Amino acid sequence: MKLALRENIDRTAKWVFRATGIVVIAILAGIFFMLMWNTIAFFLKIKPLDFITGTQWNPSGGQARYGILPLLVSTCLVTLGAMAIAIPLGIGTAAFLSEYAGKRLKNILKPLIEMLAAVPSVAIGFLGIVVLGPGIAGLTQQANGLNALNGAILLAVMSLPTIITVAEDALQGIPGTYKEASYGVGATKWQTLIRVTIPAAAPGILAAVMLGVGRAIGETMTVLMATGNAAAFPKGFFHSVRTITATIAIEMGEVPYETTHYYALFAIAAVLFLVTLIINMIGEYFVNKYRKYHSA
Amino acid sequence: MCGINIAGMSDTATKLSAQSLNLWFGSKQVLKNINVAFNKNEITALIGPSGCGKSTLLRTFNRMHDLVPDVRIEGEISLEDHNLYEDGLSVTQVRRRIGMVFQKANPFPKSIYENINYGLKINNIPAADRKGIIENALKESYIWDEVKDELQKPATRLSGGQQQRLCIARAVALRPEVILMDEPCSALDPLSTSKIEELILKLKKDYTIVIVTHNMQQAQRIADKTVFMYLGEIIEAGPTANIFEHPQNELTGNYVQGHFG
Image (cartoon, rainbow over all chains, first blue to last red; front, side, top):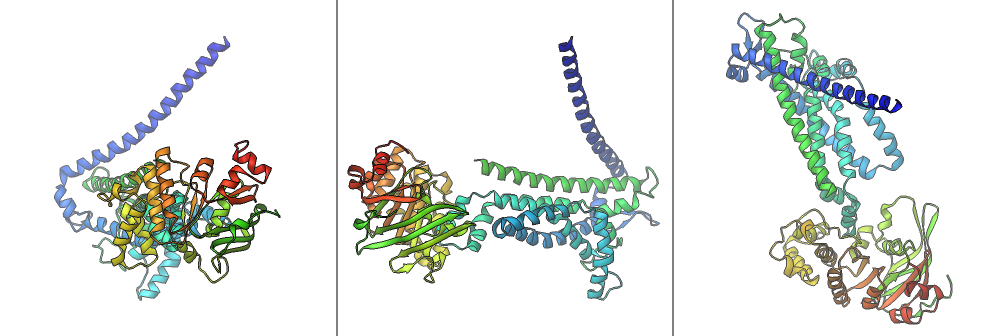
């Protein structure tokens, strides 16, 4: 009797876990299907070429325009700017933590950096409005500092924990024997870091960068708050821009259901999805390559 | 330990020596009052059971312990007339004059050529001279014939024995005065081991060699002098034949006969 009960519990547990797994997969498939369905609906109305090459995004004007270029360029501008700041800073910090910092300092710094990842994006966006914005406005003699540079700096801060953590793991994973060999021929710490440790950790560092890009490109709230969201074609770092994510967040709330505009927002979301997917896949590829290299 | 016979090891040709050397990792004393001298153009073997401090002693000679926090060193180490830890010699200069070959072959994840070129670049040897030096070092290490056609191949694809000979080539390319070897054959098969031993014997004419080994036969085959260590102290030191055939100390006798290890 007892045995039968135990076997029943075992069987039920198996079904419960199988069901939860299926539910998660079904939700993901549903999201993907909905994204694709609405994207296709958009392309039945607007030619893909016009969408990709159009330089105007103006869905509510007299003659609606659905050109993704200004949004895509905005997203790229902000992300590239963020990476220009975060990559050197992140790799530098990772190198410091892994090679120079003492044990005690490292034990304080690492959790602090990881805590940075837990700051809500809306709080960082707020900092952009009240601290960074006025600062940039003062420096550039503009009316306000809500522009691509502001967003790039905030995104850099947000992607730093990812870049630092992954890059530090990569540097830490380099066998001590490589470093000993380098010191053994008379190399300094700096020479060893630049010529042996970092090249050996390159796949892991590249993965760190890719994951950082992935983090920055999909971020919504911060850029929505900090970049000004002008719909015009972006003119540079000191001008207001409007990223793909911000556009969706702004317009989705007031767009009439199942109009071309509604479908258009799904289409730009699909583009964002595609870009993020590719970047994450590149990142994963390098992470795996780096793992293989180290288990060998 | 007082009263050790080191008379045979301190003549005028002393190249490298330690006087009253003590070393602690944290609060644990690992080397106790070490007095030892290594002669020019001789091979000296450091033997003793695991954990006796042989590798630790070896690594004090090219200041590898500088990288370890919590290490405290007292006493003197001299390379000819210079005190390695004081005389204004920088650690990089010390390591250039005293090369090292490690227990596990550790070529850089670079090409065979770059593995040797790296040390030359680090030490600012003119680019025009490097090619010749690299070829020479590979010939000196008896690996040239095996790799001359594939110098751009990753060094990690060589066999274990070839990798270790490449590491020796990397060390000799810098023309050090002393080469320290930390159980260089412990990960190799007998054939590779005999090749390396042959190589070490040939290097003797140009270099002073100190080798840590667990292999009694190896010590007898290649070493001119042997130093026996136990629990951080030097128990006995002298010509290899004496140590193995007429040990003065009971511990030495027991160890070389394989009673403990």
